[in-house]
Length: 109
Image (cartoon, rainbow, N blue to C red; front, top):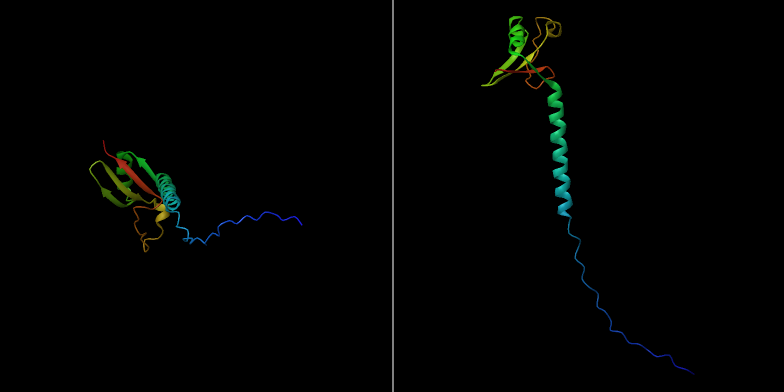
């Protein structure tokens, strides 16, 4: 009988495996990317809801009592202009919202 050679390898001890650490880099990059998308989204809708009108047109709206709210700054006037048809009856006063869809910005030169 022929004998096969035996190879004795050292027995490896089980290695302690630490639980995987969270991938913080990916989470931080995802968070920053999400914030940039949200910022761009808000800026886009703000530009769509605000329109710039000349000061003379603002004075016309003011004379017709269509200006519901106005904030006067050094170089601009932010306000809400509501046409008479949208005002409704005299008993209901619309709540002035400077961030509403009819916000106007008047630049003073």
